[in-house]
Image (cartoon, rainbow, N blue to C red; front, side):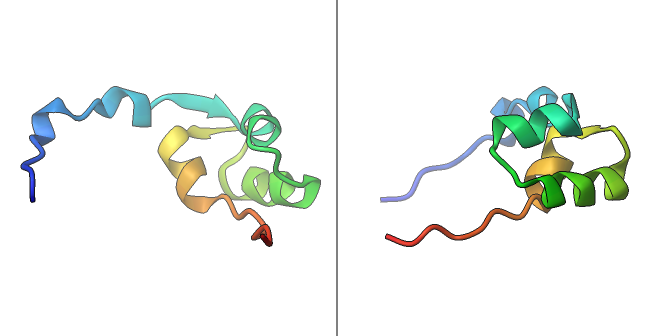
Length: 62
């Protein structure tokens, strides 16, 4: 079964939310090196979407 997603219903405001890179790294338990990489890439602040799309997390084994 398929369903139609109305793009008008997507909350675009949440993706444009500006966050501190340091707080984002703490919240998502990123390594110090990854936090430094994101800071070098974006500076001290970036949008939530930018951070989510560019953050690298190590794969956890099962």
